[in-house]
Amino acid sequence: MFTGIVEETGAVLAFEQGAAAWSLRLAAQRVRAGLAVGDSVAVNGCCLTVTAFDDEELRFDVLEETRRLTNFRFLRPGSVVNLEKSLSFNGKIGGHFVSGHIDGVGEIEILETRGQDCYLRVRGPKNGGRYLIHKGSIAIDGISLTVAEVEDDAFAVWLIPTTLAVTNLGRRVAGEFVNLEFDLLGKYVEKLLVGRST
Figure (spheres, rainbow, N blue to C red):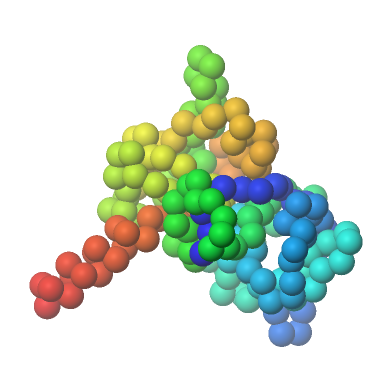
């Protein structure tokens, strides 16, 4: 589990197809502290298992299914990704509960400054709008954000300067794709209600 509070951004060193899986190598600093092989790290919000690390980089195996269903298929050397270590029980919860299991990919429709604020509008996957509510939570590339507007499968959030500075959203442009994880509560409620009606 994660909180959606990004600790740092990392840079992709390589993302290459291997015999058994894709190999992802990232340069990172802060998330390496206290890390062990087998630990979970959210990379653009996607929960991955650390397979190796040293003083310079982190390494992960990525399944083809994960690459296909996330924005990982667009990763290239130099791509900037958001990183967060998994939640520890003695830590703070500053965002919302994020599982690291991506529900789909969304396309950035608008990312612009409006007055002193930054407005981000994303078109989510078909029928994803059913999990969105005004003032509810959404994880975009692993960043816990509050939904400000909902229109069918599209939604908008407002970004504070810290989010733009600490995460990869400050480098994004319209037309790019982001990983989306909808709030767990909505998905569980839907499952329970469907079970009651059958």
